[in-house]
Image (cartoon, rainbow, N blue to C red; front, side, top):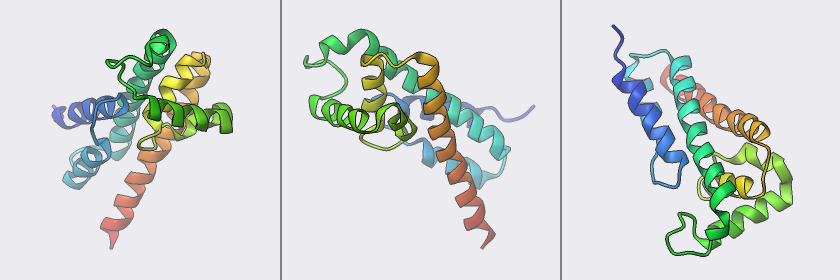
Amino acid sequence: MPDAAGPLGLFLSAFLSATLLPGSSEVALVVLLALAKHDPALLIAVATVGNVLGSVVNWALGRWLAHFSGRRWFPIDEKAYARAAGWYNRFGVWSLLLAWVPVIGDPLTAVAGALRVPFVRFVVLVTIGKAARYVFIVLAVAGWTAW
């Protein structure tokens, strides 16, 4: 039976990292790659699914709770929300390809929900961007370990 703890931990790290909670799924991915116990393609898939699902939570928060954005308990501060809205206004729906970028990515996914970006379009663009990031990390680690 394969060791599922590593991929499960990666999934949870990726999910939490994509929500507004702090985390670093990239570090978890690199550690699992270094251990060489799991297929890199499986790790990319697990990290991508977890990270996209976390972004879906942000989209839902934006979609149904954006009118509370000025409240102290709202998980996105006003500056981050305004910065993400600026990115979205400047680059449109294509900005969702950058949902993986630290600082702006999480608020950007909430802004997409608030602006009512269609869910399927949201998921496709966010998945492309997030999967590309994990593929890049795996290739970078593979290249680095080849030295």
